[in-house]
Length: 279
Length: 303
Image: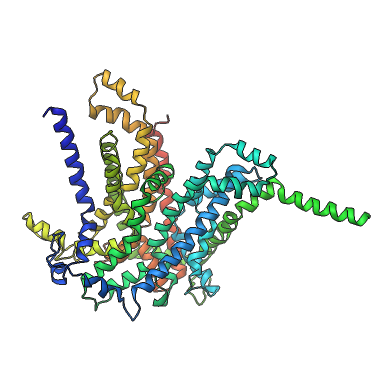
């Protein structure tokens, strides 16, 4: 073996070894979902359980307070899907206004949008809560869903970047053929925006699926809990002794994220590198 | 006849109005403008107003600067500022350093680079979830896997969440562990650096290390600045991990700013006091952002 091959092999071994350390906690969680409680409690480092306890999943799925995890998953799915659709559609409209239409004040509003990217959300969290409380909406999904229909600066920016690459001649040709500025959006720009829409949708779905603060302060009835709130309650109930079941539900809660990452990791990486989304 | 023409004219002008650039622009930008007013600007003004009152959900009176005076005499508050600063100053530089290092190692055209990138990005992808927070709590518990490993290495086990001096470390480690998005942004920046620069440096006899400091870092400095500011702001707002893993304890040693604001706002319903706190937070974050931006002219290279 020459020096170059040895160097190459060392490189791959080092990268893989460090990568293994990186994903170890995740693997440990997945294996924990199949372990016996006693094996978890002794802090075993093993990734392969001594005995495979598949019943952890059935036990966890039963949930708590008579509400099963099927309810929590349905709630999370509902919240994530609605907020993804809302965010993506509204962001696309706003991006179209900023990148294709010359209207008075567009520069000002664009600046405002960039500034909101840097605003810590805690500053508006309390007054928003008070407003929704006054409106009698605390305890419903609306305070979590409505703010998704106003676009998100990161996605607006991402879509604007993408629109730059769509030639303006297409718009002009469509106008010659009898389109107006509205139908140019619906018939030309929106369909061509697809890759950017998919990227934004994936990232927003993750955010909405993982969101904790919103459901934590706005949801009150356990029947309405999302998976993240349910998991936290599940793990915090002092009576919980079934660690295996807790790991099983934790693993399941990440399943949609894993599956989407498997299929869309290219779009995700592109989206992050163009805008720097996802803290 | 005359009336009919007028109607036509009127409807014609309405149509005209709808098709005007200004109208189209505001129609499409409406979600943002309305949303900004309703969900950002008005709440901000309200929160500034509430910060001068003793508002709880039932009502409140104007108390002037009392909340702000109280803040600076609140030891738990001052502690939460210090705890947060400590977390930000340790975790952000390390997170960026790891992100940059791994991005740099993964730029070479080796087989499997995109697989490796996905591998290193995975923790970031799921890091914000409650599931991972729960796993972290178990990993670092007194009988957890981390202590088992330490014992295996011959070290004494650490009571991570029982010792006020140690409780911050699992949270810092967790934050560093999620360097994935910085890594991806750095990787995109590294791709932009022209290969000729490296070739020229090699001709001049520079080794890998030297060209990293003389070429890579200066060329990447605008990206570093961007990452630094965004990561800093998000580190200042850290909430979920501390809420789930340590609950702020023991003895307030991980009682982050955002956590303390949450306690006052939603556990004690001291909305006025919590509003004052979040405004002070905004000021602190702004000061640090401005400091970073001001110093950037000494270390960020344009072009």
